Amino acid sequence: MIVDIGGGTTEIAVISLSGIVQAKSVRIGGDKLDEVIIQYIKRKHNLSIGTGVAEVIKMTLGLPIEGAEAPKFEIKGSNLITGIPATLTIDPHEIREALNEPISLLIEAIKHVLETTPPELSADLVDKGIVLAGGGALLKNLDILLREETHLPVIIADDPLTCVVRGAGKVLDEIKLLREVTIQS
Ligand SMILES: Nc1ncnc2c1ncn2[C@@H]1O[C@H](COP(=O)(O)OP(=O)(O)OP(=O)(O)O)[C@@H](O)[C@H]1O
Ligand SMILES: [Mg+2]
Image (cartoon, rainbow, N blue to C red; front, side):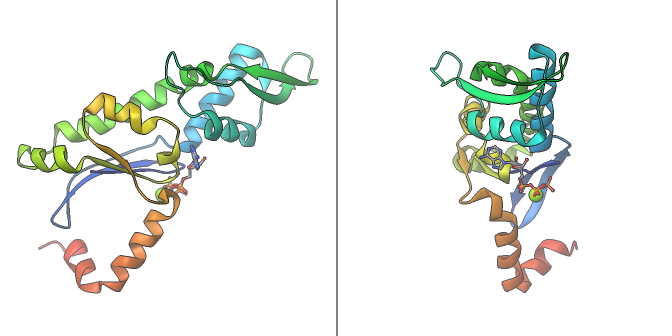
């Protein structure tokens, strides 16, 4: 199974013998995570922050493990009531709370694809597990959470941000394989 978590969408697919067996695309990706962080901080702290700040928060904190110590994080934005620039110290666990809904939906979608994959492939899935690709694969502790939720091995692809482009290059080097993958008999 490959899960490519991009900016706009996440593509989930089970691939066997060069063919896609089961797949699902969901409109949840890194941009959505930035958006829910912005909304959460607006609602909870009356602070308006830019997308860039939200992205830094996401990349720095990710999904803090419940109960674990996590350093507090200082952010800057503008106060929604006074309009004056302000600084806020956020607790990383708040970010976990903010990301909860989109991450749960993502995990649900992954589970749905697993549930609808033919049982003949179960043994392979148990052995090979899930490969995470795309920038979202770098979200801290997402791999751990997914392992807990699915009980399958979860591997982050090497340099997840460039895997799609490197994979496309590899497949172009092997045009015969591309033909097998793209031409349906
Ligand atoms: N360390 C990180 N932690 C969390 N998210 C990250 C990290 N690094 C990059 N991202 C996020 O990954 C996303 C970009 O990933 P990627 O380049 O795979 O997307 P894309 O291929 O352009 O989008 P799509 O596949 O939806 O068209 C952005 O939302 C970015 O914030
Ligand atoms: Mg992509």
